Length: 175
Image 1 (cartoon, one colour):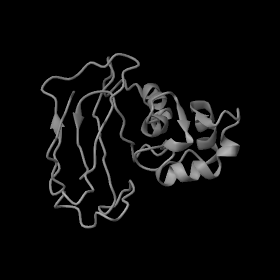
Image 2 (cartoon, helix red, strand yellow; image 1 turned 45 degrees about the vertical axis):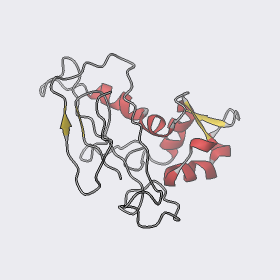
Image 3 (cartoon, helix red, strand yellow; image 1 turned 30 degrees about the vertical axis):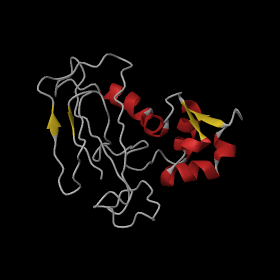
Image 4 (cartoon, one colour; image 1 turned 45 degrees about the horizontal axis):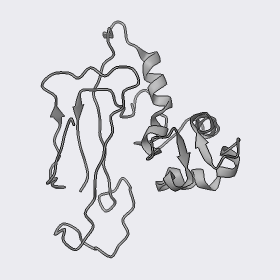
C-alpha cells in the first residue's frame, strides 16, 4: 500500500510524495480502491436519498490519482515519449476495467463515456462476445478522434497531459 486516507476531508487536498521513488517493473499496476459514504451517518452528505454518480463536479462522486513518474534512463534531453504513448493507449481500459480481466463488460461501462460505449456496444464489440477488448476500444477511440474525458481515454493534445501511473507522488480527491 502506497497511501491510505481513512478520514478524508473534502475541504482539503494534499500531494503525497514518497520518501524514496518506487521502481515499478514492466507490467506493474497501481490500483486505486476507495469507498464513498453516502449514508445518513456521513455529516458531509447533503442528501443521502440522492443517487450520486461519478463526475467532475463537487456535487458528484470523484476521485483522481495523479502519479508523477519518469522512465529508467529518461532525461530532459532523452525523453521516452514512445512509452508514454503505449501507456496512454491502455488508460481507458485501466480506468474502467473493474474486474481487471482485460475486457470491459457491459456492467463496467459507467459514467458519460461508459454510457456512450453502451449505446454503440453492438458496433464496438466486433467479435460479438458481449465485452469490449482493448483492440475494440482502441478502434472505437480512433473513430471518436482519439478524444476522451479526463480520467479515462486518450488525449492527443500534449499541452494537456493525462494523468497516468507508474510511481512517484499521488494527489487524492474524493469525499
